[in-house]
Length: 284
Ligand SMILES: NC(=O)c1ccc[n+]([C@@H]2O[C@H](COP(=O)([O-])OP(=O)(O)OC[C@H]3O[C@@H](n4cnc5c(N)ncnc54)[C@H](O)[C@@H]3O)[C@@H](O)[C@H]2O)c1
Image (cartoon, rainbow, N blue to C red):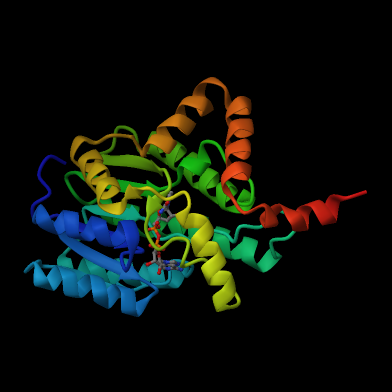
């Protein structure tokens, strides 16, 4: 899709981080972002930024976990804008930094509900609309942790690996159609992902945010530019950030060594208290 001007681009998780950066980057190219998020305040903030830039845009409150809400979003977008050219499944949540034995089952389910099922419902609701356009594109935001996972994030890594594999198969199922498919593998980036982890209290929020911010280096705007370029050039894969390239290399050439190295690096940088619970639960 060489020219994004006047293209309708539906973006989930657009109230913060990559989603907001994508909306602004697309508006700068005269595309029409339709921003969606479950967080009304964040969504309004993105709306204000788009308004300040004089952009034409749409805005919808959407909880990606609801299939019915997705079907309504598809109908609303089609009736307001006459169709949709690009879907970016970006909404996601990170897990608490806890071992697989400590994560609550509810928390594990929430991760899959947003990160996998949200993307799945969105893809199924919107691809029939994309199919009506002369050229169209689907973007699914995975994670570099879908390539090589890290300790204390087992279920997040699994939800993103599921999304990555689903996307790779969908790309082949749609091969020969006019719909391009991109899987995005960002490394740790400066967004609110750590701060938005579902937690029980403020203390947990700060601890999780602090742990995430130790690793997050790449600016969200840089990731957004790479995703937009992938839509323009119909690239199947985006890997962004030095850490993500490193993991991609290991995933292809030496995955076992990659996991070991990742775990060693994580232990070195993170708070040793994180491993205390697991140690106690598995001590003989
Ligand atoms: N920041 C990183 O380091 C990083 C790295 C790899 C992948 N990712 C992925 O990038 C995507 C965007 O995350 P981000 O880093 O911009 O984080 P973020 O927390 O800044 O933004 C995520 C947005 O998703 C929204 N969201 C959460 N649950 C939702 C739901 N049920 N329905 C609709 N919206 C919902 C949040 O309200 C938030 O606005 C996520 O899928 C994340 O897993 C992020």
